[in-house]
Structures are given as structure tokens and as C-alpha cells.
Length: 577
Image (cartoon, rainbow, N blue to C red; front, side, top):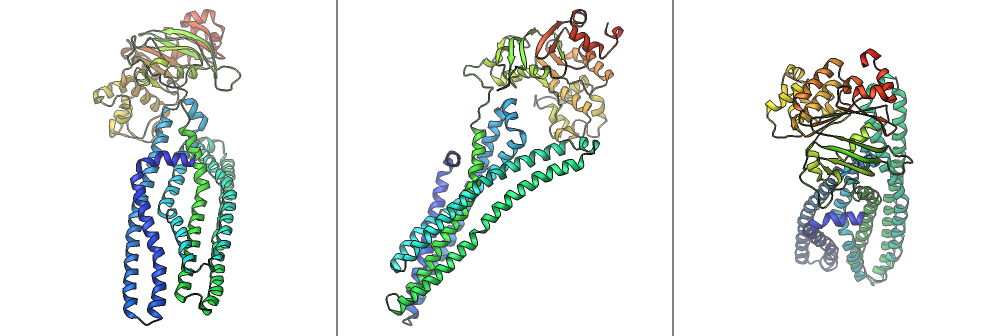
């Protein structure tokens, strides 16, 4: 998964990666060149007292060092640029993919996990790319070149490498094997903490109202402690690396000086060659150390890449057909025929045999007990879900054959939870119609019974809206959400229990005002209050996912027992009549 993700998203930056590779190679070669020059100075300059040779060779070393610095600056610049662009592209790809998801896919992953995958997981893989470009590319050149030059200095002394390198490789492999499952648990732990935090912040008033502060604190502490233990365990394993590498380096240095000293004494090796050999040995071990550090990043990046790829490879169940219709012949027409909806793996469908029709100028109401499938039915219309059987037609065309943008442009949806975006009242109202004038916004606010409280605000339409609209009451949010839908003037309005936070007087005024702007449109209202839906042209009564009654208020009151039970639980017989 990691290789596939890197190959896909690093391909556009091939020439920049090539520059980094060339610069790192030159830097590594220059670094390997310095010990040989140093050995020449010792053997041919210091030993012979040749100051001129020392100065000329020293100048060459200085030039090589300056070249190293320049190459390092260029390599780090382009490496950081490529890594940042990679992270940007992967986050964009995740965002674009999630934007195509239906409610089913979003529910499958969960919002906390999707947020973690888009932020923390991408950051981990991006860090691997950065460290690879600025560190790891030097390691193989330094290790291979250092080994070759160490052999050139003294073949017999190089036998030490036959012991050191295999031991280091085995040590790194064992660390990788131990840390991979730990990092998988770390990412899951971050998901859990993200989810708990979102729940606690969003439900802080409920927590305090029920005096559950201690319980929630314990719940968070348990997840936090679990994540801490995993990270501590990973840190303990990681902490073994540096002492082990330093031990190997020091043991090797002692061995080289011990055996090399005897070879110098026997005149089988020059003093400068011994110095160069020790430097090459250190470079080889440092290259292994860099590789070891990189391999510590790899397990976590591999886990993160798998989680990212899982999202990128998930296709939405709501797919636009290749020959999608871009024009609806009968705007506002709505019909369902034998519609069935079942969640994957569910034993029973949520909706069964839903059949009805609504036409422009009509108001269709849907009522039923909690869990009867009202919201699910409404979600089939804009294709937030797709019916598993039967058909759903909007504008005279099956929604599966309609271009998504065309379908959504024909619908004005006010969801059950009125959500406002951070910005201003005007920016929220223009969400569905960016070119709407201030006059159109005020007209929509007036119909939605929101004009009065917006006018009372100091900045009017430019008043600030916090994330989620939390600086407004529930009823104000609902009215602003309705105004947002009214600004679009769609052919089909969908109100999903959008009157629940309104008092009866405001509810009545709003419904009366709606008639003036929705006369040529189809209006679908999901409601719990009978007073909200009693004047509808047609009422659907749902029970356990089935339509058990269909007609006007008077007709249903006469012959639908389920509707009678709902009505008489809310009002007297005289009020109902």
C-alpha cells in the first residue's frame, strides 16, 4: 500500500526527485572523498613535512566541503518542496474522495476516523517522504562507497565489516517486526481519542446536565492511557537503537585500532590509511544508523498508507451513470414505485414497497412514529442513499439516470439538524445561490420568519456565524436553514422535521408564508407534530417502514388507525376535527 501511494502521488515530481538524488549523490561522494584526502595529507604531507602538499590538498578538501554544503542546501530545499506537495495532493485526493461518499460510506468510516486519516495519517507518510529525500538517499551511496574505499585501504582489516553489517541488519529487522503492530494500535488510538473528544465537546451541556463529568473524564483517561502505553512501548523499543549503534561503533573502533595498530607496526598499513579506514567505518555505521531511523518511520507510515488507501479505494454506492440526464423534463415531479431500502447485512429492510407521487403545487407530508423510516425515505430523493429495489423519480426521470448536479440543483433540502457554516449570515444564505442579491436574501428571511431577529443584529446580514451556528438558538438555526433553501427557489423542497424547534405561532406563520413562494413547487415535509402537516394535500403515514395510510388529514382520521393514534396523542378529538 505504501509503495502504491508513493508511486501514484510522487510521479508528477519526478524531475525534482531526480535533482535531490543527484545532489545527495554528489554530497555522499564528496563526503567519501574527504577521508582519502586526509590520509594523503598524513602520509605524504605531515610524514614528509611537505607544507605545500598539505596546503594544496587542504584546499581541495575545503572545495569539496563547500560543494557538500551547496548540494545539501539544494537537496533539502527540493526535498521539503516535494514532501509538502505530496502531502497537499494526498489530502486533496482524500477530500475529493470523501466528497463523493454517500451517507453510507461516511457512516462506515466515521467522521473522527476520516479526519484522522486526512490529517495525522497523511502527515506521517509525508514525514517519511521528507526523511527519505533528505537522509535515506545518502545512506546506500555512503554505505556502498564506504565499503569499497575501506577495502581499498586494507582488505584484511575489512573483515570486521563482515561481522558488523549482518548484526546491524538483524537488529533493524527485529525492531521493525516489533514496532509495526504497535503503530497500527497507535493510529486506532488516535481515532478513538478524536471520537471521544468530538462527543464530549459536542455534548458538553448534556454531560453537565446529567453530572457525568467524572464518567466522561474516566472514559477519556482510559483511551488516553491506552494510547500513552502504546507510544511508550514504541519509545522504549526505539530507545534501544542509539545505545546499540553506539556500542557497535565503539567496539568496531577499538577493534580497528587494535588490529590496525599491529598492521601499522608491521608496516603492512600506513597511518593515514588506518585513519581513513576508521572514518569509512564510522560512515558505514552512520549510514546504517540513518537507515535504521528511516525504518522506524516505515512501519507507522505503512499503517497510515493502508488507512489512506482504504478511503481512496472505496467507491461510493451513489454513482452517476455514464449517460446521465442533464435536463429534467418535468421539474418538481416526485414519484416512488416499490422503493425498498436495506442497509448492507441487515436482516430486514428499513423501507418496504414505498409507492406514491407528488406534483408541483402540492404539499406532501410524511408522519410516523420514531424509527418508522421517515428521514431515510426523504434521503432517497436527493440520493444520499440509493434505493436497493424499486425506483425513485425526480422531474420525471429516475434519480439513478440523472446527473447529480442537475438533481441537486432541482432540490432545496433543509435537514433534520439545521447546520450553519462559519462565516456570515449572508455567506450561509448564498450557499446555494452565490449570486443572490441582498433583496433576495431579505425576502427569504422574511418568509422563514427570520427577518426580525436578523435585523436586530448589529451587522445584519454580515453578522458572524460560528461553526455549526452555535451562536444562534435552535429555532433561529432552523429558520436560517429554511431561508438558505428558499433563496435557491428550487422546484422541489424537502423539509426534514425542520419545524420542531419552532413554537406553534411561528410554525403557523412560516407555513402560511411558504405558500406564497412555493406555489409552483413540490413541498415534502417530514414532521412529528400533527399541526405542522395537517393542511398538506397528501399525508403519508409510515409504520415500521411501510406506508399504512395515504390521503388528506380528514381521510386518514376516518380510516387510518395509526394516524388516529398519533393525532389523539397530541390533541383532543375536537381539535383534530
